[in-house]
Image (cartoon, rainbow, N blue to C red; front, top):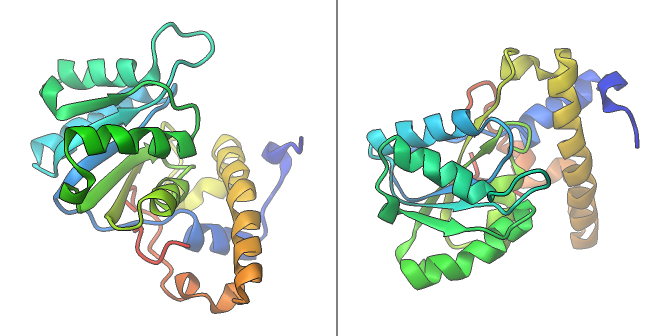
Length: 220
């Protein structure tokens, strides 16, 4: 495996990552907060969920994440317990305890949402997850659930501002790892569809990078 901590992206690549991966959206009241599970930065993720709840920005939430090596509790149980302790009613937090990756987060959660709320009653979703994973959350959600409006908020523990991610070895490693997973797949899809990557509408509507909240509109 390449050592991405020693890899220095070019100015062109930094610009592409800022425009296509580290997306940002305006945030408005949504029907659902989708909390993607994590072993890291749990407190920061919970802090953000609490802020959104207190500001009336979601009615329901679902926490998705299975048991990871070294833990007896699922990511879902760990995060939900903290959210409830901070004041979110437990009945407003749905649970998914098996997912081990972003695709499973979405696929395993959809039947739970259908049974508890009804997918037709959910028109907008705020995704909450890691900064470096960014676009993969709404992109994956869109693949399996294209009908809903998608918004994005991300958090991380890095002191380095998001706009300077490429200057921090740890931050850079995380973001390049995600970019290297997503961008080749995107290029293949565009190639099969006969679209030019630079002519694709997502590039023309490059979202703002710099603030933690991020836009899922124009995701490809």
